[in-house]
Structures are given as structure tokens and as C-alpha cells.
Image (cartoon, rainbow, N blue to C red; front, side, top):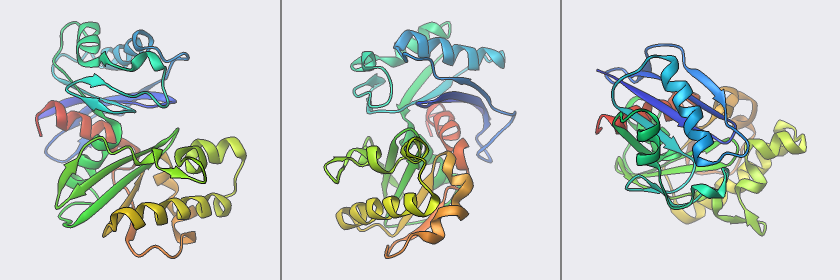
Length: 246
């Protein structure tokens, strides 16, 4: 069974059809840049460009970088504030010509995919997936069950949102070395571990492709730390799973 998944990020909007039996993309994903300003209508155009590139007609799952409840976007940390309290399911469904649309938090989507097909498969206890990108997203699982919309990237660290201190964007903007950035990630993981005592951290987002550059530098964390197996496709896979009701 194939379903389409779209992952809206702070820098790009990417999507592809997903094979839900194996948790992989059936075609190479298509990506467009996230528009600036990233207003609801402008992002909807980007989503449509990705979906229409494949001539897709069927259910579409779409991730959003913020809190989503019943298809309504409640926060907008790394996209235009015009997204707050928008009925995203209706907006995006209308722009896609009435296709069935399911919208959910981006990190939650990535987490569900990793727990089903990736690094969290079969793991019990508390598992936390953290996506490092424009911000820091989080997905918390207890014995395989998702606690939605946790948004742990907004925990306070050194007087600021943690994602303003340790995201991949901050690394790039400040020109931080892997060593320097890994120290920041380590402090953030220590803070999350103090609060939740997870058995496993899964590190996702685009930086997961370079896990060998920084994970060996992180010390003093009791939980096991592994890179996401689906890497930056996890959000697309999880979005498709949500659209299929999985």
C-alpha cells in the first residue's frame, strides 16, 4: 500500500510516495524551498508543488513544525506566525483539490516511523526522538505509545529556548565546529535526561546523516544514543503512516 507523505520544514518542503509495508520511499523525494515569508498560503503552494510533481491522487499526510491538534496548527516557532490557529487540514486539503489530508507534528511523524521501521523498533520503556534542524523537534514514546506535541526543543537552556542554543541552524549560523556543537548537544541531552530518564535517544533530522561526526564526542549520558535509521526521510514516512491511519 502506497500513501503520499510531505514533510514541511523551516528550510524545505519535501515529499514522496511511501511503501507502508517496508517504510521506504517508492520514488526519489521531491523538494522545494520553504517560502519566505512562510505564510499558510505560500507554504500550501509549496506543498501542492511537491504533491503535483508526482501526479498524486489519494490520501496525503503532511507534517508541520509545531503543535498540531485535530488538524489545527497551534504554534509556529520556525514558520510565519500566521499559522497559529489555522485549520491546516482544510487549507491544505482545499489547495490539493479536496484530497484527504492528515496533518501532524513533524517530530511526532518522524518518531512514529522510527519506532515502526527504524532505530526504535521493538524498544520498550521511554524512548525520545530528537530532530535537529532549523529547530529541535521531539517525540516521546512510553512502551511504544506516543505522547504527542511534546516540543522539547523549547525547554529553557541557559536562559533561552534550547533550539536557539543547540539546533543545526545555530551550528551553521555561528560556524561551530563539530566538537563545540557536540558540547551544546550534550548539555541539552543531559537536561532532557534529567527530566525524563529515557532508555534511548534517537537523533534525527538532516544531521543524522553525519552522526559519526558528533555522536562519539557526546559523553556522560546514561541513555543509549543512536542515529535515526530512516534519517531525514522519517518525517515523510511518518506522515504517510498517519494518512493511512497507522
